Length: 200
Image (cartoon, rainbow, N blue to C red; front, top):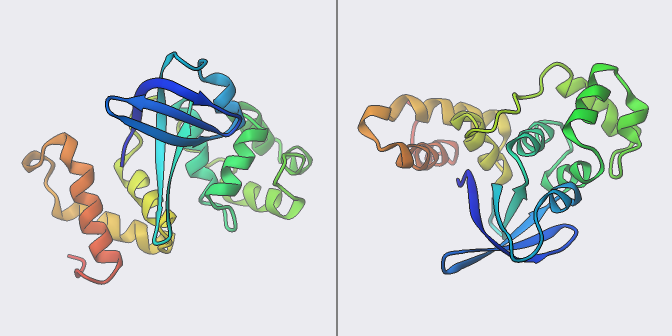
């Protein structure tokens, strides 16, 4: 639900950073490539975020830029690839090399990435070739962002997307402050996908 968090880095490890923003210190899980790209402890940084929210855990994932987060969300579309596996893949390959491997149908290059066997590499090619989301630096499209959040909570992705589409029809942007729009759509979508509210 947060696009990014800006603050001072208080701890930096290979796959985790702490970010002090106001009175809050965030624990953010990152890929090794994001960790390398972020500045050293004491520096101010902006980290793009994605929240994993399940009944038994909440974990904030972070990315050094919107392009890496976009690739992370694309990887979640692949059958059998969850947030943990997606972060491991991001640690082993950057977006440019990943896109080149897709373009060339290079199963060997993808399967050489730690955490990706040949079977998973083939699934990635089938699911994502020619379908990578734009790597823009702005806010992700609201529909994709909320769908990914619901999928991360354990809901079926197809059902989640249908719920978000339905929820968007009930929220009139002109009647809602821009900052509150995503929150309102998320609340309605989760009510629809959990069966607590009928789709319009």
